[in-house]
Image 1 (tube, rainbow, N blue to C red):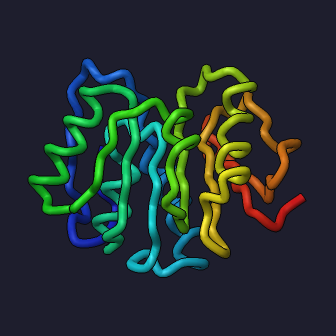
Image 2: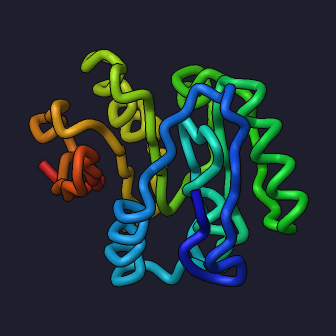
Length: 181
């Protein structure tokens, strides 16, 4: 995995092989940031990275100048790795070891972008819970967006607040906004 842009552009990161992760591909990540750069000033956003895994998305946002970042993952090894890299690169990423669903039920902080990259084999019921919790608890700021990365075999387009989706190889980014559907 590598950081594509920003102050750590081109930096390769090697996550421990034992982590239960599937990092977002460079192609998909680059496409996602091309979309986000047309809407947001990355330096101004508040990011909540759910199912953060290796921290790939958080590292990219931080390298591009975002300073208000929270990465949530239930796996201790993932949180430890994100903390290690965040310290080494001086990225100031706040990590929280927690079940994402419990976290979403209790968090009060609103975010500009909530990015969720759950395991692709998550049940459709659990995929559905993510936007339900985000919108029922009003966790997005005005003009904020929830982005869920999932397999091309999962269809989230019928869920409330679905706005659109973009497909990159076997991965899909579904975008959810407060004023959609």
